[in-house]
Length: 315
Image (cartoon, rainbow, N blue to C red; front, side):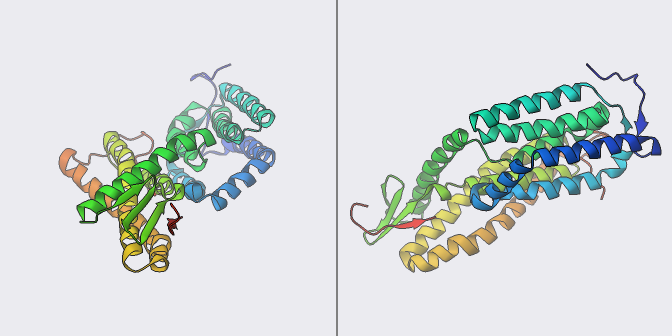
């Protein structure tokens, strides 16, 4: 089963594509109905797990990106591709495995494959190629599998503790470290919990950087640098937040420091990330120029993250 470039096609912008749109809407409605429990669980994960709360930004961003590309998409031919049906069948096999094994991440993967298969089956390769980066962007709305989460969160937590100690000592604080507990003084102990490992900031920054990469008109390598750099930028921002919080814990007490960590720092880190990315884009333009991508390449045009003593924990 395949799709041929010579097969009959119609344009998305012409009346002849009405049947394609109708079929797509029927399949989309069927998928929403079928995956409703998965979508409800995904919403619960966004609301209940701060590390992945930024995932709820992905669907509206996708809608915005599709809207800004509506004219380009309307000019593309519809060539339904039977290979998409194979992807849809594969998505149901993966989902069945997820249900049998009680493994929610497989159901997330199944949903991703189902969306990709639907686009390919109904609209064909020309539209799918144009949307491939947006489809891949959709993967950022899913939480990491638990095992992978553990492999990522623990090293991030350890690194956050180590980097905070390093930064505090540069500022003149003599910090004693006991595991992930920092003692900037004898009377103050601050625990760097897993929740402040920086994973939340990391997921948020990656989503913001990927959105920037879609919107700006820059060469592909500059977009790749922008997205990849979001990882060290998020880690640096989290380190700065931890350093400031530990200093406040030691200087003015836990109540003010806790408010700073949750409110002020949380509100200022994202604007800081945006400013850093804007600075990166300026620097990349100085270094390599800002020649837009050639017409037709996706993601470029924009029309339009003890010991019996009292220990305060950073949640």
